[in-house]
Length: 375
Image (cartoon, rainbow, N blue to C red):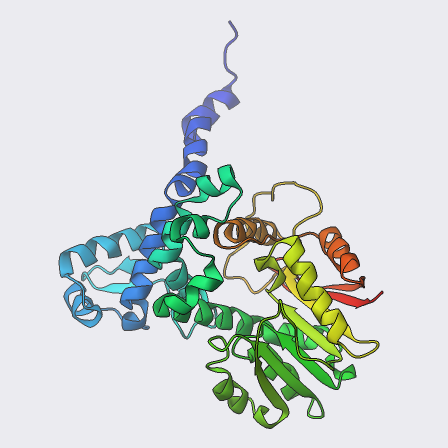
């Protein structure tokens, strides 16, 4: 039996044990559902909006948010533990820098996604993840008896939250998308599944000679007129409601598919891509905007990157983890999945298209523009 060296004895005294370190890693995983609901509940109550840059007593905050003081105080205390809030010595509550990122004026759409993910319809679907893995069917379908996109027209609250989150996410990405690719070569751009039109409006605003067509369901296009007017491009953009599985508007030089294909299985994606291929002008392009899975099934390495830092790299561990989690989200909510470049090359080939440029866009989510040309 050998004796511990002085160095090993010192490590045992001053450093965390292996078991303690393991618990520190596992605790946020085990209680991740609770942390998400704590943050989401605070967002939906309007806690961060009510606080702004001020400090408020719990009673005043309860009155402002329509909550009972005692349970609100307990929620706030948990928010302190999560690093979102802080109590001052006088008992007033204030948002931390992390908490302020959950305000609607933060520039990040995180509050929109917390509101969406906390919606009972979405929350219940995530509870059926095990069933999705066992059956191969989307968890949302198993819970609600209908696919997400058939359910949305029947659930006004979920539809509003869903479209708001999608629009907010797109709005945050638009500037880098618009400057990362030469959209100026096109005369007519068709945004397929373009929602309220923020991406198309951003591109058209940068190219005054261009015209555009925004194509989506009637419900998704509801707020598009005001968005296009706000960007000053309403006179150069037509709205067309329809079903991209049936057809898409003809005559475009470029067809945008942003966060569309990851909602659908391979066969459905080929139908959408082929419809775009058949509709586009000679020499046109299909531009797929999506997060890309790494080609290898490696896990992202641990990271010490500041989550509030503007520095962002496509190969960051955060980006790899984001797309892996989003792939599971697709399994829960849809028939779709996230894909690798190789996956997209195969789908494009099945639709009489060929892979062109692959342009990295997002620094923190492995987001890319995948260009497709006629085969």
